[in-house]
Length: 323
Ligand code: SF4
Image (cartoon, rainbow, N blue to C red; front, top):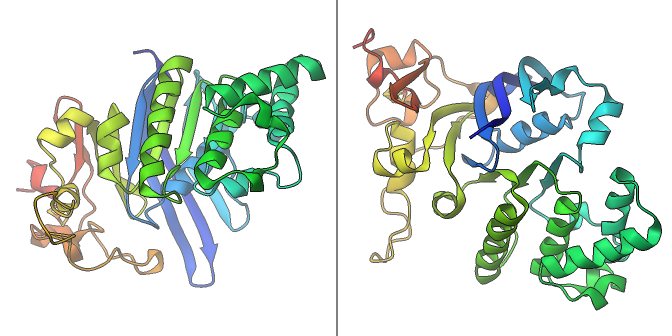
């Protein structure tokens, strides 16, 4: 499909007391119109920073985009002014965060909050905005009569539906959802994910779904980028990833998926922990935990290689030169 977003070699650093931290390192991926990309990784792997980078909301200081290009509809967002970005955020690219309360204003009614975004980006009067806001509420499964209610009058799942209504109110081309269901009860999670999938199709929105959960990816994504310590280790279609995960970290993630038939919650967890960003090992960042590590792995950072068509892996196991 036609390309909507193309991220090239994006690097984002943070200045900390312990030195410079590479939160996102040389990240590249792309999303076509109507596609969903899953970005999967553990807490601290750089998922949220990537999203904030695309939105240009990385707090500076201490954060800074130090390299890369972010082409959205063919234009590099990194060359836009803050004023231009404000017209893009909420209108062309929307973001949904993990905790709905961080995006909702506790002292405004839900109807007012949805209407506010619409008025910010579209040439409509109060009445039209209000009408559209009510329609959006219904679209996410909340009765229009409740548009006068405040966020605290809703359950967690309902609040996230309201956030989704706000995010989709201006029919954005791209929705970035950062762990949108993690804070919710398990049963509610499935409902909210289903709603997002349906709305994404209905609105023909492309989506970046940030998650630590490979199960969520299986349901909704077309492509997946597995990230570890700020960089993409494997990037391919969902089908490729599920049929033949190639990177040892990805294989480990699959090994640690709880199986319905087993009592043990984690069958083969990956041993050890992801390194602290200030204590990154030389070579492949995964080598201290990798069951397949070779001598070269602690010396050289593996480069991205297209192992099979459309299947990209950063691992020395697949580089002919190194073997
Ligand atoms: Fe494991 Fe080496 Fe591949 Fe890193 S490069 S994932 S250490 S085999």
